[in-house]
Amino acid sequence: MGIHEYLFITFFWGLPGIAGAWMAKGREKNPLVWGLFSALFPFVLLVLWFQKPDHEVPGYFHKCQFCGATYPWKRSTCKYCGSAHHAPESTLP
Ligand SMILES: [Zn+2]
Image 1: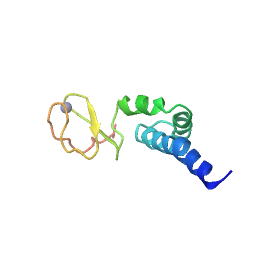
Image 2: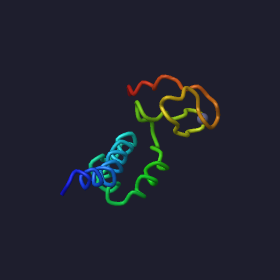
Image 3: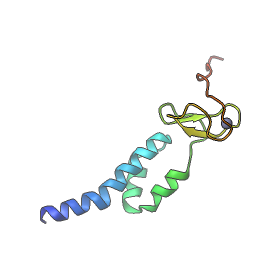
Image 4: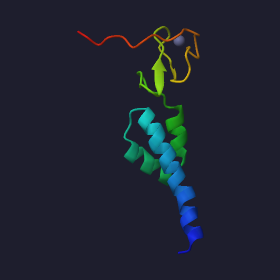
C-alpha cells in the first residue's frame, strides 16, 4: 500500500474513531469501545453527540441545579434557564 491508502484509512477510520473516543470520555463512557464503534459506524458519533450525561462530568459538562439540564463546561450559565452554576456540592455524608 502506498502513502495515499494510509492517509485514506487515517481520515476515514481514524478521525471518527478519535472523535468518538473523545466524546465518550466526556460522557463517562468507555472511549475504546465507543471509539471503535464510531470508526466502524460513523453515525454513532451523532448518537454520542446528542446523548448528554445525566450528571456533572468535571471538565466536560455542568449539571444545572435549578432545571437539571446538562450544558457544556465552558459556559458559565445554564443554556436553558440562565442560572449561573455553583461550585459542586460537598459529597460528605
Ligand atoms: Zn437550568
